[in-house]
Amino acid sequence: MVSEIELRRVLKEHQARLLALPNVIGVGIGRKRVGQQDLDQLSLVVMVEHKLPLSALSAESVVPKEIGGVLTDVIEVGKVRSLGGLARQATEYPDLTLAQRRQRWRPASPGVSMGHYQITAGTFGAVVIDQKTKKPLLLSNNHVFANSSGSGVRQKRASKGDPILQPGAYDGGTKEDAIAKLERFVPLKMLENFQVEVSALTETSAANYVDAAVAKPIKTEEITAQIWGIGAPAGIAEAEIGMGVQKSGRTTGCSRGTVQLVEMAVQVDYGEGRAATFVGQIGCSAMSQGGDSGSLVLDREKRAVGLLFAGSSSITICSPIKLVLEELKVEL
Image (tube, rainbow, N blue to C red):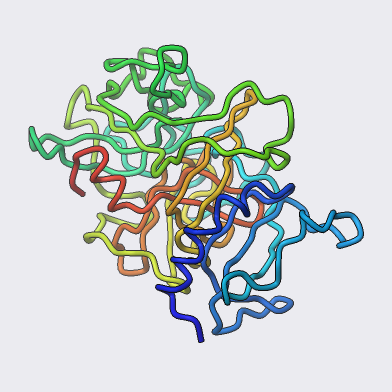
C-alpha cells in the first residue's frame, strides 16, 4: 500500500497538470471510493464539477487511473464557491434558531452573522489573541472581513479601520451596528475578468494558502469567545482523514461532518469573473452553505482544525488553522 508521504510527493508533482484538465477543479489525498463505500486504500482524489462519459472527453482530458504508481479516484463535487453570500435553504438547529443567528447580539458570540460593511454577510469564527499586543481580535475570512481584497492597488477592496458589522449588512446591519474595525488580512491572489466557468479554466492563479482576516473589537466587552452550540475552543489539531468535525455558522447553525481530503489543491469561484487557487486545504463532507464562511471548524474534542471558506453542495473546504494563525500572527 502506498504511504501518505509518497502520495504527497506525487500530488505535489502532478497537481498543476491535473488542475489544468477541463472540468477538473481540485485534487487531494483521500480514501478511494467504490459506489458509496470508502475503502481503506488512499488515493489521489480528483474533483470534477460534473462527471462526464469517456466518450465526451478527448484522450488528453481523461484522468489516468494511475499516476506515478498511485491510484486515482474521480468524484463529482459540483460548483465550488466562496461561501460568504446568501444560501437558498437551511436547517433549524436547537442550540440557536437561524433567525437569532442573523440578529444583533451584544455581546456577540462566534457563530453569528458578521461582515465588512460592503459585503452581504458571513460568520464570526472565533476570538483570537494578537501575538504582539496580547489583545483580543475577531477571526473570519478575507472575503468576509476584507471584501475579498488582493495585494494590488486595483484589487484592494478594503482598508484597515473599515467597519465590521454585526449582524452583516444582508441581515439588516448598518454602520450603527459596527462591532469592530478591520485590523489585517492575508491578500488573495486571483485570476480576474474571466467570462467562462471556473471549471473550464486551463490556468491557475498563484497559490493561496488561507482566506483569513482579523478585526479589532471596538469594545472588548461586546464579544465573547464561547462559540454558539459548541463552547470555547480547546487548542488546535491537525486534520486527519476520517476525523469527525463540527462548526457553528450563520446559515446552517451547528453541523457535523468528517474530514475526507487533505492537502487539497482547488480552484474556488469568487464571483464577478474571479477565481483563486488554493493549496494545502482540507476537504470535509457537506456541512455548510452560503453565509457560513468564516466558521471555525473543530474536531469532536473542540480542538480547532480549520477555517471554513468555500464549498459546494457536496463538499466543505477550510484552510488549516495552524496556517491561519501563523499568517495573521495570532493565537487561539
